[in-house]
Amino acid sequence: MKHIDQNNSELVLALADKVLAPTYTRPEHLFVEGDGVFLKDAEGQQFLDMTSGVAVNALGHNAEIIKNALRKGLEGLIHTSNLFHTAPAILLANELVQHSFADKVFFTNSGAESVEGAIKFARLYAKDRHEIVYFDSSFHGRTLGALAATDKEKIRTPFTPLPTGYRCAPWNQHVAFNYITAQTAAVIVEPIQGEGGIRFADESWLQALRAHCDKVGALLIFDEVQCGLGRTGTLWGHQHYGITPDLMTLAKPLAGGLPMGAVLMTQNVADAITPSCHATTFGGGPLVATVAYEVFKEISNPTFLQAVQHKGAFLLETLRDLHSPYIEDIRGRGLFVGVQLNIPTQQVVEAARKEGLLLVAAANQVVRFVPSLTITKQELEQAVALFAKALHGVQSTDS
Image (cartoon, rainbow, N blue to C red; front, side, top):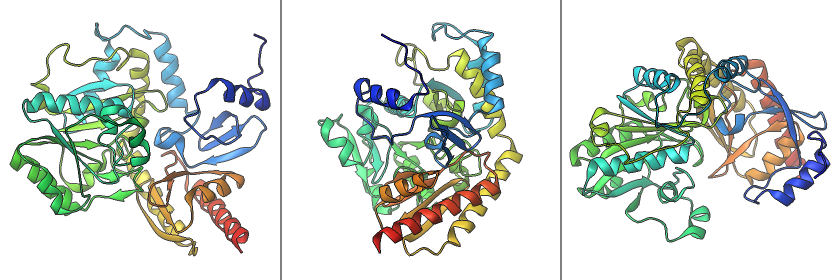
């Protein structure tokens, strides 16, 4: 096979159509480099990236912290499997435990794997109780067990029959507690729904959910794959609610763009785990854990988190000044912000891309602003200005 120039977008994109499974509908741009909150394609066009790899690149593109950590990691081991101990995973787990409710950590490679692991650990703990309760508009992943706890018919239906023992309860409603019984092993909930449209659990409801789980003996799992690790201006999304879970799932920004996830758990849950009941070949590998350790140290810094809070408040204020007839609602916390529209979101995402702004859609007519947590206020202003131009462009097209 002849050599293909990686910067020749025409040839590479044509090859993509031939060799990649068609699971995504991607725009005809070939991204080749990035810096901070900006991406550049092979044609030299620059984009302001408010997706950050879907809330993954918390420290931005081409971050020095990540590059330095990679260099350090490459001087040591890359992989040994979990048959053996390596220091980076142990040191990272210690950091996660020291900064959370948890006593133990299990490493994975993705959010869906973290959810699968949490569900398995919950059933181990619960023994004869097997039901998993989840909520409407939830998203927990696309592997079969995680998909069974995801309320999105479009992606569920083609894969039925899904695993049994799952019940979908109403979100933010006390009637949901009727679904949580003596047969419930665990309840899985996002404190803030991401794919569901940046929807916040009511504080009183989430606190009552914690109390009800305690009452009936069910475990409570917080899925913080998207809302955790500094995204809301606190290290964990649930810190805004004054309660803690029994298990928590993490992934996305944990290793700053490298594949890594984790399940955090209390000692009570860990006591039910025995060797070989669950495993991972790559989870917590020394190279990725070395990077994640440095990323976590940066994100968990109180000064860093305070800056996220300030920038998030600035973003909300700036968006609310737009007064567009297409905007129904603006909601968010930290740099986890959703704009609910009364027109198709994909139309706005495409219009924004033409203006040099990258956005990602969510359910319920919402576009998400989930930039790098290192974004500046000036860059946020620029993003909102481009968003305004996109909305104006849509309006001009409609008129």
